[in-house]
Structures are given as structure tokens and as C-alpha cells.
Image (cartoon, rainbow, N blue to C red; front, side, top):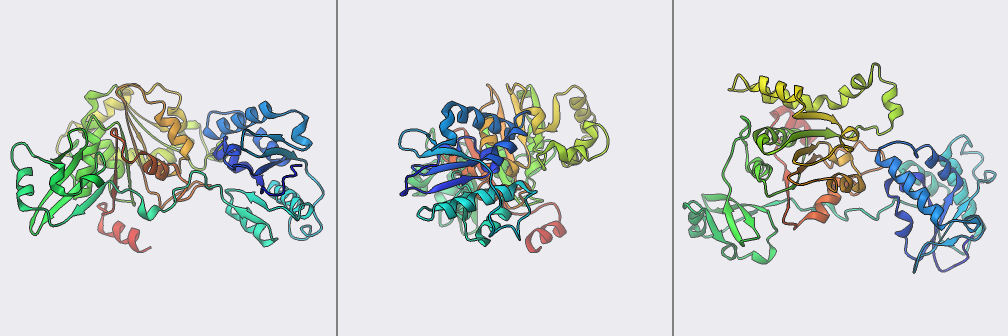
Length: 442
């Protein structure tokens, strides 16, 4: 066991490793203990193509590169200025825990190891790090310190970049210039040029005069934003106008759109993809399957397509909206695109292995992705590809993600200010008055 009394002793749960396989390098000089039940759980995840399987394999490989017998005898140094890592074998349930924690759950074995370490090392601070809220509560109930893994957390979602803002008291002359043929003004006329973000959108207002605009960093200009239609869909508010502008802009290669149910995120993205389909080889539309375990899908009846249909149905619902319009041939066009696989709708796991060259790629329900999964998707983008992430950060289905740790928030926080990136937060519901009322009050 590590003997440095000045450092903390971190006991890692399996879900932390499956979230970030590089986690052992994130605890600075503190020592790390891997309970043997964690390695047993990782063994169940070593085969497969999901990010969970990737993290399991990567972690075991990195542990093996450090290894030797010292992992079980005193621990090994993780790296320069980092602590030691060791593996702790299971042991009899401590008499303090026997009455309340059955030995048939892996979580209880992990909890027991952490508890015994605390009892055997009273001079050290022992912390169980897990993304399982229930396990954290159990640990605290028996007097153990327990924390979430927060390396990739967004500190305050209330200050998360929205991609748009309202600026009052703009001079009438500036607004008038935006409606002249050039439709631009110098950014300095807003008196906020130091705080402007590339591809940020504005509602500029002076009394009854107003204009929608966007900051173009390359020329340091403010450009007027016109309301555009996309595949028969017209924006119903300023936010949707901004979203359509970014979706149809070929220079914006990465876009995130967040908003509550009914704000039009997915519909706008799909309509824009169909509107600009001639510029792309294919349109991919995907969403993560939550629950992430293939076991959960196994309980559903039918073949693999039947099992996945319930997860993909919301995407087809949006296609159904687009098929109903003034153009009577619109439905035939969508059917043809699906038949020719120019438009592909599939679970995210099915898309990952494909070549993303000249693709309009929409990832729906992206709030259920981890930061690593977001990174994996973006780094697969080839030439001419546009990636759009949509989601609602307040409706997360992933058992180990929340509004601070999900990949969508991480993306917004890290990509803000990049020339190829834009973001829009949609707040006004447009699905129906009833849906908006429920979203706000329930």
C-alpha cells in the first residue's frame, strides 16, 4: 500500500474509469487504489465498439504498462509529480457493514474495501470517487468521504455561453446601416468589440427599431441576419432565425443547439440538412441509445431493427413533419433519399465506424454523451463535413451524467470562441401552447 501520509488515498469505482480511461493521471500527487472487483467489472466491458468498451480496454492497457507485482505490493508510480497506484484485493466484510450491506453486490465489495482502508489508515484521508450517486450516499452513511469525478465538469451552467444576446440603446444610425445594401457595420460601432465572440448572434435594439445580427471575426464586422426558410420550415422567433443561419452557413463546421422540448432543435437541424443536401455526400442523423448496455436492448422483442425502432422513432417523427408541406413531392424526395441511403438514420454506435467525409452529421440527444464521446465524434470529421449536436441539458437519461458533466456542456464550454464553431440556446417553445406550458411548469 502507498505510505505517503500527506497525500489523499483515492478509491476508484468502475464507472469513473468507463467515463475517462485517463482518470488516474487527474489526481495530482494523490495515491490511487483500484479495488479488484473493479477489474472484474472492466473485464465484462473489454469487447465491443461503444466508448465504454474503449475506455475499459485503454485503462487495462495503461495499467499493464505500469504493472508488475508492485501493483499488489506497495503500488507503482503513475508518472512524474503524480502519486502511486495499487490494486487492493477483496476481503471479508467489515463487521460495521455486515448488517446493512449484502455481499452479493459489487458496489458493496468496493465500499467495503474503501471502508477497510479508512479503518487501517486512520492518519490518511480516504475518498471513494464514483459517479454513482447511490453509492456515494451509502459511503457517506458509514462515514466515508465520497465524491463525484469532476475533472471535466462545467463549473456553473448558469453562466454557460448562449451564443446570442440582446444589446439595447444601439444608435439608430447603426441599425439603419444594417438595412442598407451592404448589410454590415464595423464591430467597433457596438462599443463592445473586446467582448464579442466569433459567430455570436445579437438582437440590436433602439426603441422600436431593431435588427438581428452576427459577429464576423475575420473581418471584424457585424452582419445583418435575414430570416430564411429551410425545406419549407420558417423560423418563428429570433433564436430560431439565428439557429437556421448557423445551420445553413457552410463556414460553420461545428454547431451545438440546446433547448427544452419543443423549441425546434431537431426539426431545424434536419430541415437545414435537407435544404443544403446538394453540398454534402450524405446526411447522417444519429442519437445515442440510452440505456447504453446491449443487455437492455436484448429484452425488447424482434430483430435488431425492431429493438432500435423505439429509440429512433423521434427522428422519423421529425421527418414526418417535413413531408407535410406545400410541395407535394417533398415526401417522395425524402423517401428516395432514405432508399438510396443519402439520408441515414441510425443509432450512434452504428455511425461511428463510418467515414465522415462531406457529411451533414446531426447528433440528437447529445446531452447523453460523455465528453470523450463528443471528442471521438468530432475527431472523425473529414473534409467538407458539418457536425451538429442538439440536446436538452436538463433532460439527461444517462445514469452517470448530469448537467455539469455531460459532453454537450463540455463542448460549449471548451469550443466557445473558435472560428469554425457556433452555438445557440433556444428558450422559446414552439411545439404547442400545451407543450410549452408543461415544459415550464411541470
